[in-house]
View 1 (cartoon, rainbow, N blue to C red):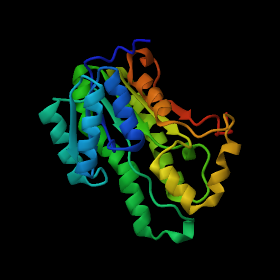
View 2 (spheres, rainbow, N blue to C red):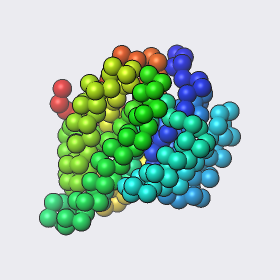
View 3 (cartoon, helix red, strand yellow):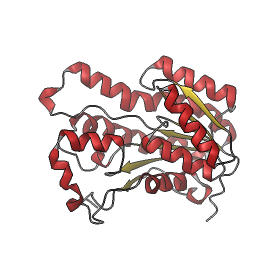
View 4 (tube, rainbow, N blue to C red):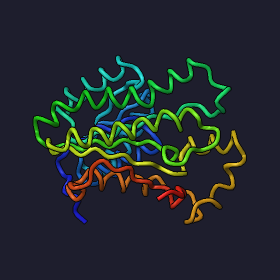
Length: 253
């Protein structure tokens, strides 16, 4: 299937590794110029070289912490300098720490808010004017299966990420007349470093495949394929949805 993405430009947050990196590679395979970003320059350089070695598209990188206004401003300035504007925005970030409600103080909640919600709002505000000028845009947020079915021990993620779903649904209505789609993708248990850390901290997660109808952990490239589809012309009539890529783990309809 031709996703008709060749020549588009994408900004993918937290994309030096993990799911963000997989999304950047998948979009690059479809002919999209990509801007990857993260906090570690060595990781960014390594990922830039890897994607450039596979795909014949421009691959840029910007160093920045998406949970800070200064970091977001720097990333957006790099987009303007190196790409002009982004047609596609994929928001993403690392997750807040594991722990039960009483283990987190108010500072932890504030950090989770800045990481998971403020970062999304700030980046959307940064790319939106150019998308509206072009009358074309794709905004895709990466949250978690936990926004539909909370995961034990992840109270910060369960709570704050859910607010992104409300934002996506609201923006899909506001931005539809400008030919900008806004969707959310909810990864399930996928083979990443964060999942390995969760397994290490809570042995209960080691039996999680028994709860997944497909009886296996997801692969990053499977998740990335879903994001690429939502970014494409083939998905031009899909907006305001939260798509689980979880092997059937979520039990609700």
